[in-house]
Image (cartoon, rainbow, N blue to C red; front, side):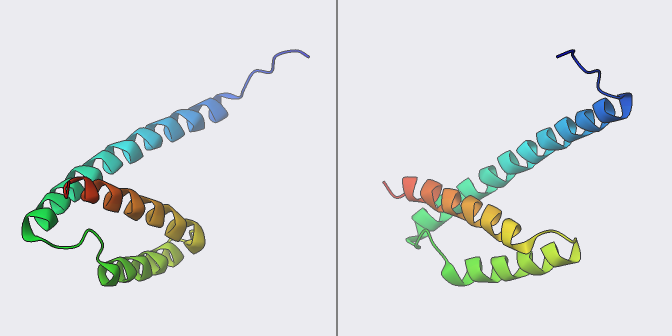
Length: 96
């Protein structure tokens, strides 16, 4: 099967996707740096790693924002629940 040459527009779009992916990783790194500080403060204050009220409020807000941006809200909720779970796991490391 002969190798196919991708159109220039496709290559340009792939470069944009790669750039966006890097931006997303930068944002995640920034978010985890901030949440690490939150974990430290919670540990210093003797607070629980999980704040179910805050988490529920966040998820409701994210669901609304996803709808406004025409994104699949279930996907967004799953994505952020995964992030929240990782944050809680990281917070628990401060309690050791």
